[in-house]
Image 1 (cartoon, rainbow, N blue to C red):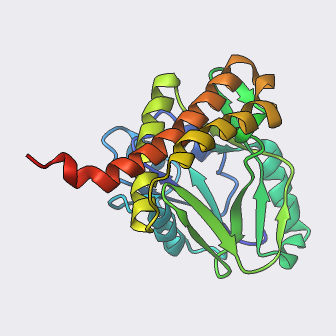
Image 2 (cartoon, helix red, strand yellow):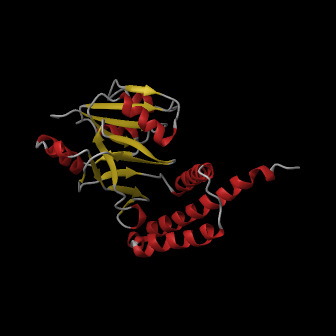
Image 3 (cartoon, rainbow, N blue to C red):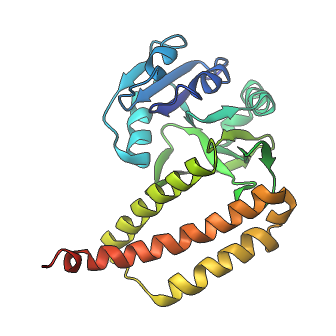
Length: 257
């Protein structure tokens, strides 16, 4: 690579996914991994691909990415989660941008993320195209957002690439439900800390309209039964987030004798 790209991977107990992720990044100038003290073979597998492997306590989705950004030595950063894969098409697009010096004109690149779920690629609904800004100049970008959803922003022009980042998400519906439960709890706590309070409209209308948007307006029905599952659980997630906010508001009263 004419310019150094550091692929930065955050991982934790990802032995089922991490090799696929690392293999897709071997073309980069540097691979940096921050592992949150995995108890499986994640660390061992990572060391087969790079000596830039670190362990650090989990700082959250945003904190962990800002940590790994500081550890990278390249002028360009490419964030990856352990269950993501750089497609060959996306790899070739990135290399072409840098070899032709187009990258001189941009502070970052964004691209669609294509999710693999229940045996098929999801190409409609809220899960696609799910555009992510993941490749950026180290000195012009930072990771922010609201837990558990990190978001990279840059100071400068952004170009959208056409080829996707692959996301091998939940193993099954049980895994999806467990992640949904964890994420909605994090979101509810975050909203409470920001001063947001529960309203009945949030619990009644927001889930309904989210389902309509995901399944009908964004044509989630085109993805068959998995599309229906995604739309339904998306709506359930919205409902859960707001009733958990209500629970957080009243948790002190639940402990009274």
